[in-house]
Length: 237
Ligand code: 1GP
Image (cartoon, rainbow, N blue to C red; front, side, top):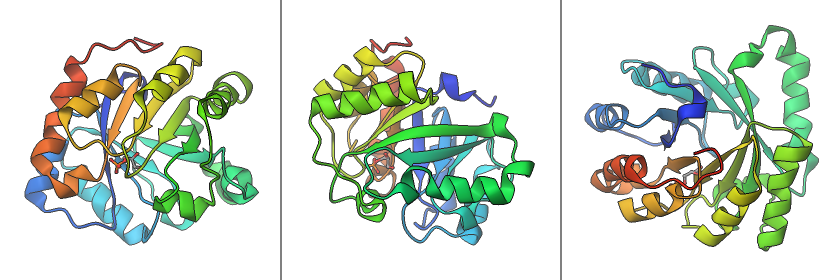
């Protein structure tokens, strides 16, 4: 049964540019995770995105595309997640690509499938930080202000704390959780063990697990149960 994004506690993020065997993909999709997000910062094409979508569609799990380039948008996903990088130095990544996409495709988009993400990029060494030219020199107050901007100023459905590749600071995630109202808090970055997934699940509405799928599938799969059994203190719990 496909779960609406409001119900997502745990999601796996698959990079369409990375190889994953059929057996491993089955384990990911049948793990009990709430959704599979397909997305990456480099080498994402319409071919590898479509191929990954078709493979994920063998299973009943919800499938979302996190759009990083307009040319890799393909139809058939349950949701389209559109990041706006709040701490970019270049307006292109805040609203420029979005403007171009809406100009070209706005008339044919199903907006009920589209979710905007207020994206706060927090690991300076990540591809996403480099591609989006993000200013990651932020303290907790800066990050909380971006959370308020997403929730109370721009009214975006998702605030995404993107530590991609490194494990973030649970105290900061907790501080963000404290100020969010309607925006759903996504946490992603550096989760390698179930204990870390559980720790972040205490504060984040949705925990995103990526790289460890490719590095240690067994540990990746163990994060599902850890999140589901975590005691959520989230603002939406
Ligand atoms: C990346 O937030 C996700 O976009 C997950 O991060 O790959 O570090 O798990 P990791």
